[in-house]
Image 1 (cartoon, rainbow, N blue to C red):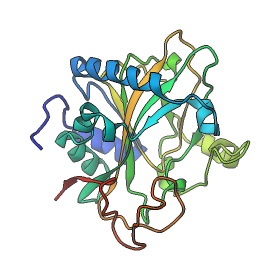
Image 2: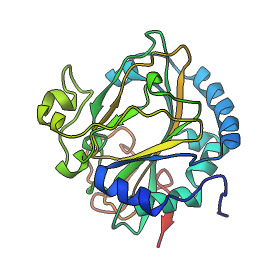
Image 3: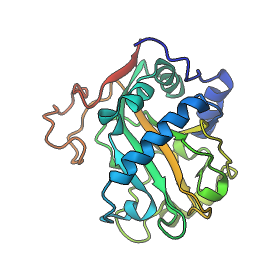
Length: 259
């Protein structure tokens, strides 16, 4: 794919910050004019989604998973060479990345959704290694009061700390009170087109949306292209015919950057 100048490359300082903290703010990652097009398409898709609350995740935000499989605008963004290069650089030591999932997320105000409890992403995953990160792109201005993400800096160094959203009281701070000894990131005011990236082992969460408008974002998760499938039950991979102890060679997990 030709390079996409609507997405900028990550900087050396951003790579160094991510390595130390397990997260990084990426201001003006995507051109705001292009984000405006994505925002209109996102609102249309989210209006069509089912609003049934079937899990604890549904209480925190609404979502439209695998959006890049259905919408070429989001697919082009997820496949943007600059994003693939950036994910490869941020995930120190990998030679390339695959897409794990793309998603539209909405956190509605006025009690529509609550807080996103602090959690790690990786404990649910059927990969044999934790080299994985999520780019979280603001599709509207997301001041801290709207529920922008916050991160426990350095928590990615402590390995998998257990699953959250499985039962009441299983957020990471309840399971591991010592996490409060770590520095929590400051409240982030994000402009449309700004993003954050966080490692799949970084403990993160978000407050409820206290503004009068919805928090709207697009996320794409990348993982080590050489990761092997463990066979652990997982809704996204069950029934795909993946082979245990082999790479994720399937159209749902395309390689977007490789040395």
